[in-house]
Length: 240
Ligand code: GLP
Image (cartoon, rainbow, N blue to C red; front, side):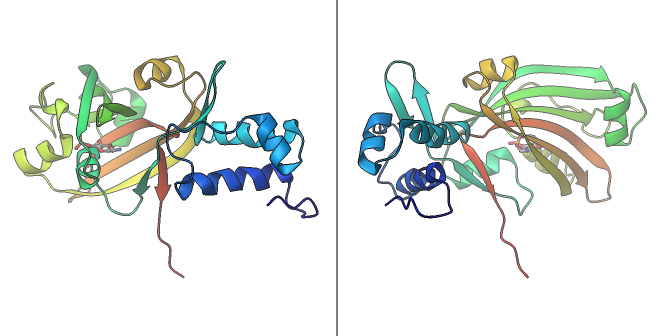
């Protein structure tokens, strides 16, 4: 029930209630939410308050609006652990999903000063610049742009980038990937991401930057990824 005497805002109570119903499976992906009027009547609250709760759920990617039809529950988000340095291919296989790639571009370019700086190479040294849409069961999940020093990772081809880059580095080149630093920040989809990730304009996006190192500390990749925030959430276990 909604507690009107609680210091917790009413819109927030409704938002949490709907989120719980989604988490528990009472509302399933594709289900239509009751209308604003129905929620307002059921809980004796204003439609404005209902709209505020639902807009928050839309912005956080739990539900989506279809013009002229209603509001629907989104697909369940993938919960990605932040411990462990894994590849997209490994992550999807571990979930029983089929990883896929759509190569957007593949070039060898002279490193800009910032890419050279991250990869600890000279400016203008050749680097692969590879952009891929990463798919899970054919659904676009992320758009990744990777930079790799050509000398360190020779022989990368378009075909290799259609499957796992990490597998190529480790199994084919025999180089051990050891660690990475990852930075996550929020954003909204730009026009390119809207098209390639098949999301609505201004959809929530998680920007992830990964700097990855080999066993001897050599930087091997610098990656900028745009993950769909309506399909992903990140999880970490903490100890104290
Ligand atoms: C994840 C990481 C990327 C990394 C990729 C490798 O998606 N965010 O930084 O390049 O995995 O994946 P794969 O080996 O499947 O190509």
